Each structure stands twice: as C-alpha cells, then as structure tokens.
Length: 160
Image (cartoon, rainbow, N blue to C red):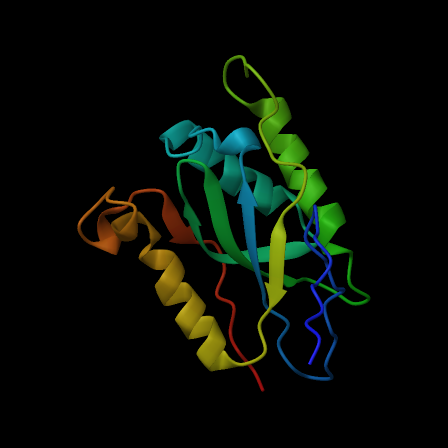
C-alpha cells in the first residue's frame, strides 16, 4: 500500500465554528508571541489582556492561562450570526500591541493562532485541566493555583 504524505502547512487551518441549534459553542485558542519571546507573564500584560478581551465584545473569554510566551483561552461567541474568530483575534491582539507599556523591540504577536471547537463537556474539562497545569509542567510553580496569570472572565457553561 502506497503511503501518501500530507501537505505541509505553514499556517493552521481555521474552520468556521459549527453553529448547532441550542448547543454551546466553545472554542479553545492558543496564541503565541512573535518568536516565542517571553513577554506576557507579568501583571501589566495580564491586566492589558483582560481589558482587551472585555472590550472585544464579539466573543466572551472564559478560563485562560497567560504563559510567558503564549496564551491559552476558551471563548464563546456572544451572538449569531458568528463574527469570524480571526477578526476577533486581530482586534484584541492589535489593541494589546497598541497599548503595550513601553517600547516593543519587535512585533508582539505571531501572525496566526490555533483554535479548536470543543465538541463535548468532557473535552472542555480535559482541556481546562491541561491548560491549568501548563505552568507546573513548565516548572514555573509547584501547584497550578500558584500561577498568578490565569483566571476566568465569564462562566462558559456547557449545554448539550
């Protein structure tokens, strides 16, 4: 049997979130800093990110963890029809870069992001457990609750 190699991608594929009648839409997002520079794990950056997510009204942010060089977050759209996730991402990333305290030596963000629409409550709980333990796996703290750059802005309830 002949093995076919998958095409190499330079950027992630972003599928439009699937709107399912009366079912929750929760998207898991990861966004990295440019060249993975460790700029984010500090109080001014954390505050600016939270402020930007609250201003960007097309999606609500639930749980999130801000690592030195990337952010994991869960979000849900605030209305239908859905605003494209990429547009919302550009908005808040641009806001954070414009309001950044001090001079940036380079771009703040990588051009793209990774996103996955969650399909069931178990997936949501598993992803959240994985994300919360990110700071422990990185050797930054001993317990996930000790990491100061995490939180939840809104409750994202799972409804089947």
